[in-house]
Structure formats: structure tokens, C-alpha cells
Amino acid sequence: MKKILSAALGLIGISTSAAPDQKTQSLDPKSILFSVPTISNDLAPVEEFDGDPRGADVAFHEDEWRQIEFFAQSQLSAVQRMMKEYKAFEAEHRTEHGWRNVYVRKIDQAPPVLSGPQALHELEVVLDAKAGPAPVLFSSGSVAGQVVDGFSIPLDGSVLLYGYANHSGIPILGALLGENPDHQALVRAITKLNAQKQLVLADWCQQLILASVARSGQLETWCP
Picture 1 (cartoon, helix red, strand yellow):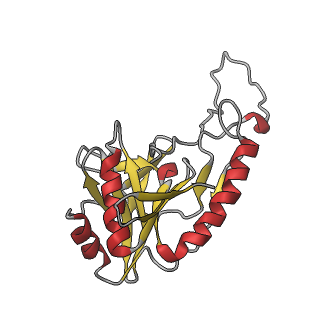
Picture 2: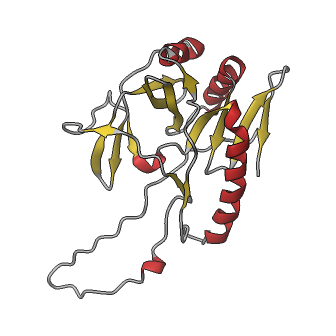
Picture 3: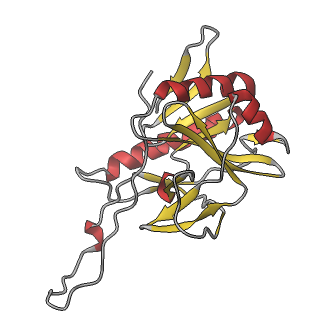
């Protein structure tokens, strides 16, 4: 299968301040490039987080939110249509050093990825892992907040699942790959979640969907 890579750097930040002995220069907004080709329009619900994240906290940039994410099988056609549209957009706006524009994904969150008040517990059972603290998101060097009702589930090999749960279940379930990740850990997770909960996995930056698991155990992938 195609190797799944860690998605997302942050949007490029440009300082607008100048030292007294520097000359002010004009900048054409059209020359500013994005360092990611796509982001989700869904903003994670966050609450104030005091201080800075420590070693036990799960922290990542808000642009990484939902770059690799799970969907219910019933959403597969909608995700495929959007990925086809996104592929054409990405190719049109790609440059040598970034993208001239960013594709904003808008996908209906109904149905939830996993439904029901016991969804988080069921997820723990399927993965044989315990949920940890809610993710802390940061933006432009500062903490944006901690995800409300959020959770994180560390897997082997620097792979992490994250999301949040509410009365309807788990609306968002994403995956984050750390430094030198063990991609097989993510493969094992999607294999279990597809077989037991009929979930599919979309990697937006790689333009790849892990759509199903054959009886042989082989993952069936889809690319636009």
C-alpha cells in the first residue's frame, strides 16, 4: 500500500513589524504561499488552557486538525467526490515552494464517526487502548486552547488517534503521525475499525482513502 505520511505544517506566518533602522517594504498578497494545500472548515471546540503544554500533554498545530481522519462507511461517496475536486484544485494552485490558495473542506459531520453515548468506550475496546487527555492546539506560536470533551489514544510507533465525544457519539476521529512513525500501527488500527465499526480513513494530503479490508486482510485503497 501507499505509504501514509505525516500531514501538515502551519500556514506561513509573516511579521509585519520593522526595526527603526529598517525600511518598510510593500508585499504583494498574491506572493504569499500556503504550506498546506487543504484545511478543514471545522474548527475544533476549544477551552482555555493555562500555561504551556508539558510532556504528558498532546499538542499539535491547529492546521493538522483532520488532515488524516476517519469517516463512517456511509460517507465514502461524499468523501470521494470531495477528494476528486480537491485533487484538481491542488494541482492548479501548486507551486515549487507551496500553494497559491488552500482548499477548505466542508463535509457534513452527520452521521458521527461512531454513534452512541458509549462510543468512546467502544473505541477503546476495539483498539485495546485507553483514552488519554484532550489535545492542546496551538497557532502561530501561541496556545489556541484545549479541545472540549476531547481525547487522545496513543498507539504504538508514534501514532496517535484523537477527537472529541458528545451525546451523539464521536463526531471527529483523526490520526496524527509523529516523528518516524510506524505506519503499520495505523494500518492495524484501520483494519480493526473497518472490520468492527465499518470506518474508512482519508489522508487528504496524500489524496488517499483506505476504503475497506478484504477477507484476505489486504487493505483496499482508493485514489482520485
